[in-house]
Amino acid sequence: MKQLLILLLLSLTLFGAKVENFRWSNGESYLVFLERLNLPAKILYYDLEKDDQRLTEEMRTGVHYQILRDSNGTIEQILLPLNDELQIHIAQKKGSYSFEAIPIICSTKTEAFSLEITHSPNYDIIKQTGSKKLAQIFTANFRNSLNFKRDLRVGDKLVMIYDQKYRLGRPFSMPTLKVAMIEMRRKKHYIYLNNDERYYDEKGHEVEGFLLARPVRGARISSYFTKRRFHPVLKKWKAHLGIDYAARRGTPIVAAGSGKVIYAARLGSYGNLVKIRHADGYETRYAHMKSFRRGIRKGKRVKKGDTIGYVGTTGRSTGPHLHFELRKKGRAINPLRVVQVTTKKLKGKERKAFLKLKENYNQSIDLHIKNKTKFIKTSKEESCCYVFNG
Ligand SMILES: [Zn+2]
Image 1 (cartoon, protein in one colour):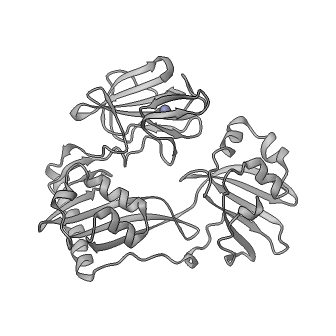
Image 2 (tube, helix red, strand yellow):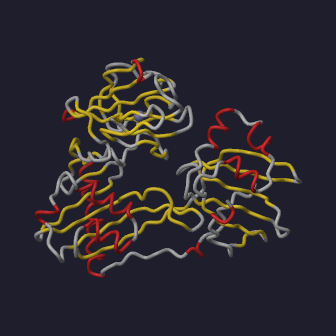
Image 3 (cartoon, protein in one colour):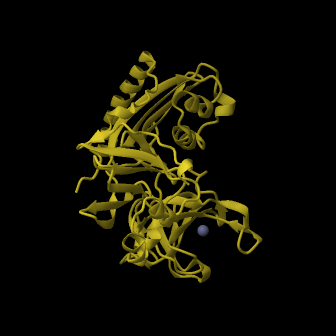
């Protein structure tokens, strides 16, 4: 296993100790990891509660993790990120070890770039930034309202302003889009993140993002939408008409969009299930819940982001996860494809505040175009003090 590890960063020195950055190697299990580092498996695995043991199974290939050693080379701390928000923290004090799941500490920066189209938004964004995530966010947000293939010309411009989280000097987690603009045939199209945390177009009409309102914060997708997949255990082709989000039992599940609860009860292999009806014939389903949030029942109105229940493993489920479905007029569709459903129109005071925000953003966008702002790769030296020293 050792030769599979890629040592990425050696030089970061904090508090007289040394932080080493590694990537979780393919196929390594947590127990093998402990053995390799000569750490006590009894304390750091076998004596743990079931939920914590399960957490250790969440480590996935390629994730950056850190080991902090003192000047003698003795391990003092280890940080193993499980998702965007949670990490395992192993600490050693006077020879005894502790295990704890703790929130991830990170900083956020607002970044921007502009570019001229040479091929397509997707191609050009990846070419300039190297980030598939940024390209994905940009195209997903405009996919339903614009036709790039038909209307886009070489030399058309686009600008993105977004927040990027950093952990130990590295970009971390999904960026949050604040404004996107694309100019096609001399007409500018915008999407703005308003103060109410919702997205609006230039007319102040809401652009509802199912992708952006993930039903479980910070969870990783453990199974994608597919109309056909091979089940390795049952040796059968099966369909998976939703997205699975792996998360710890009891993690809050939020409504992906505003709407009305039309079902909240047990239903066969779905286990504890909530169905929410949204505008335009859309419906979302949340399955295998441990329990519903108090007050969540048929007829209840919920807003995007409201907690409706908690991750569990009821019904036909092999471990704690949320099975999330999006349907339009009864037919299952890929939640990651459908991003826009126009719902709310801003009026009165809200509209006034939005217009002000829009004006400020438009000025920034004009500046970025004028200055030809390019994407800047952040240097890793900027990281500091992210090591939990407690
Ligand atoms: Zn599923």
